Amino acid sequence: MVILTTRLCLLTLAAALLPAAEPIRLHPDNPHYFLFRGKPTILLTSGEHYGAVLNAAFDYKKYLDTLAKDGLNMTRIFTGVYREIPNDFGIAGNTLAPKASDFLPPWAPVEGGRFDLTKWNPAYFTRLRDFITEAGKHGIVVEVTLFCPYYRDHMWTSSPANAANNVNGIGAKATSTEVLALKHPDLTRVQEEMTRKIVTELKEFDNVYFELANEPYFAGVTLEFQAHIAKVIREVDSTHLIAQNIANNHQVINKPDPLVSLFNFHYARPPIAVAENWALNKAIGFDETGFDGTHDFVYRIQAWDFLLAGGALYNNLDYSFTVGHEDGTFAFPGSQPGGGGVNFRAQLRILRDFLAQLDFIRMKPDASVLQPLPEGITARALSEPGRQYAVYLHHGRVLNGFNPHYVVRTGRQQTGVTLHLPPGNYTVTWWDPKKGRTAHVESFPHTGSGKTLIPPQYTEDVALIVKAR
Image: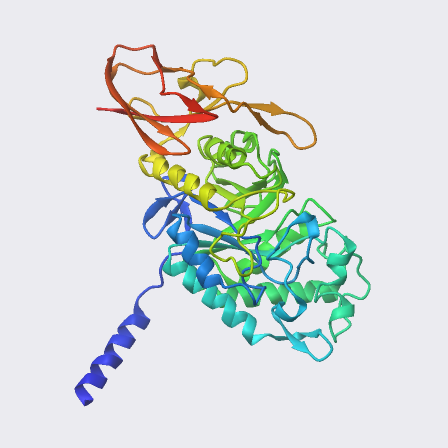
């Protein structure tokens, strides 16, 4: 028994001396993508609406198990300083709108439904750490979004940081557009303390990174506030990635924060943001979509289009995840702003499998490989010239306006694509983004210039991989 006890102590000591796993980071050979647990990584998911931790009624173990079974590797959570109420944004079963009895913020609850912002809530941090642990077991990376603007007044009046909801009188003088702007020292101090606490609690995990604020281009969130929070993170943690949400649709980043490694965009369709900011040599993410109706093909096209344009991350809001339907089977109403569900996640798995065929770290966006296509057809290509090519073709026409997006032609198609390839021997494999790899494989010698490839018949979109033999 003494020998056994000694051995156990030695094993425990050895484990304690082992270096912690390196957190997800930009890939050193191609910082447009990630390196996670020793493997080149693109983050791809269709996840719940960010309430998995702050909503105590949500069974996150079943949820994470579902994501893993569906072959997805990312989810996004909010911290609890912001929440919604039922039917905000027309979302049925909104996981970010818990019942009052199920709301779990970082601060300690007191009688009367209020919170003490000078004390932490042990139940919250136990749940947060267990969530990250469970995600890590499944190889799922968690984006922890620290703050969110208060789009509507009732969102601010329901926040624990509002003086009406805490016993400390903090936030008494702030309006909803002043909360995330460094204008009120009492609020800023609470925000700093919360950031330090959450980052400290999660320092040991390799499957987490921190986003400064969700959609900070709304409701008065300032760049100065975001830069300040980035510095607070770095005071505590020098290794985990920091992400910044830049804009809806697209925007050229002229003065990037040097502490930021991942620049996120929402509703980035078409994926102009990738090309505009490629020269930054940082990862570009499509971190939220889900307000373009309920059809699967709308979001499938957005995912393929963005990642084949060189993006590093795609995150779809999946409204089939609700309390009681953590397996993603909620039959959401047709009035829902977005979609998701079992069939859609199966289609994202096909995209994952497609990307797994590529040595994408050695590839980059390459429009020069494509011959111009007929109007109303869009193509994206990644290439390692002379070695490997990935091409995606869809029948979406851009409808410009406040929110540019695709109008998609859904009939049967068989549009060929002409590629400019150097001389060599090649094999082409066609993929149906709805059904997976097809039986349509061909090999050909090529003497140079253009090579026209004709796919099997398809609807909406088709993809191919060309590799040198």
